[in-house]
Amino acid sequence: MMPQIDTSSTDYPRGHVVGLHAHDAAQLVFARSGVMRVITEGGVWVVPPARALWMPARTPHSVHCTTAVAMRSVFIRGEPASAPPPRCTVISVSPLMREIVVRLVEGPVTPEQSARLAALLFDELQTLPVAPLHLPEPQDSRLRRITAALYEQPADRRSLEQWAREAGLSRRTLARRFAAETGMSFGAWRRQLRFLTALERLAEGTPVIHAALDAGYDSVSAFVHAFRRSLGVTPRRYFRDASALERFRF
Image (cartoon, rainbow, N blue to C red):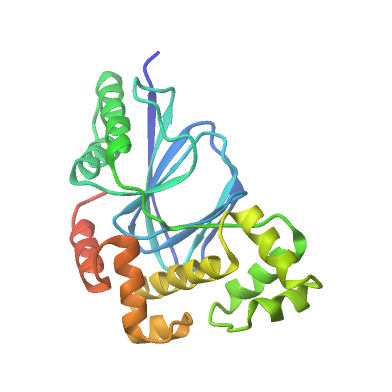
C-alpha cells in the first residue's frame, strides 16, 4: 500500500497555543520562521527555524508558539520501505528535504509522485543529524513542581540541596529520582533548559547578551560555547542560515 500524503500551511501569532491533540498520521512539522514548543508526554521539543520535528502517528501533543510561527507540515499515512524514526525527533533540514517539502506542500503532485517523494523523505530522515533540542519531563509530581518553577525562571540559581528541601526530599533522593525519570542529571537538565530558553529568545530578536544572561548564563561566551556544542555553529551563523531558509516559499 502506497503512503498517503497530506500537507498543511498555517501561520500563528506569538503566544498561540494549539491544544492537546493527536493525528492518525505521522507528522513532519517545520518552523519555517519563528520558534515553537511541542509538548508531549515525553517532555518538551523546541523547534527553531531550519529544524523539523518528526512525530510518529497518534502522539498526543500541544504546540506553543514562542514567537509568531509559520508552520509547515507533511502528514504521512502508511510506511515506505525505509523505517521511520520510532519516536519524536528534532532533525536538521537539508536542502533536499526542503525541496521535497516545497514540492509536497505547493504541488501539484499526483498520488504516485507523493508516494515516491514520501519514500525519498523517509530515506533522508535516516541520514540527517539529530538536533539535541529535547527536554524530558519527570513524572513525579514533586519533581514536576521543580521543573515548572524553572520553566518560569530558568535563571533561578537555587542549588540541588535547596530544591530538595523545597520538594521535601533528601539531596540524594532528588538526584537519583531526577536521573531515573529524565535520563539526565538535575544539573544537565537545567543547563539544557537555559540553552533552549536562550535559543527561543534569540529567535525573537533578542540580542545575544540579553538572551544569554536572562536565561542564567554567567557570560555570553559560555552561551556561545553551548550553542556551538549543540548546533555546530555560532548563533550568528545559525540565524543567518535560517534567514536564508526563510527565503524559500513553504
